[in-house]
Image (cartoon, rainbow, N blue to C red):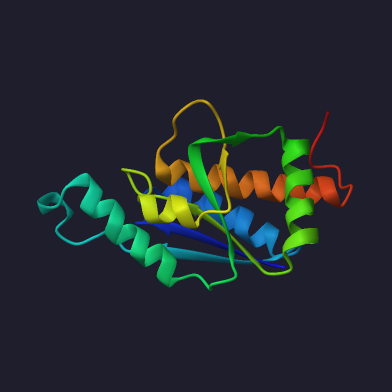
Length: 157
């Protein structure tokens, strides 16, 4: 199983970039993971929110294969505890056999085309986080899920 993580724009804050790098390094011991950063849309201030989402959606789709499983990080998605998220990941590994793609949208979210293509949605919290912060939080939770699945002592209950 391979995991791709597709995001829009640069993280921009050094402390978040360091956190992302830390958890991506840790994750490579468990799973093949690729972080794909799509550049911000040029001249976005001259476009409507919907036009920005459509262009970002096309960029996301261009980074995926037709059989990839797409899971959106979306505020209206399913919420999990860390243990139930690890079970969700294990179920995806067992049933997919392909590339599992997670994506966080830009400031305005996802286009309808992306919602239609998606195979699922997850939410990290009922709270709203910046799309830059979500990246590091997601990588930490994915790392936590891997350690739970391996029975390692990172997660405590």
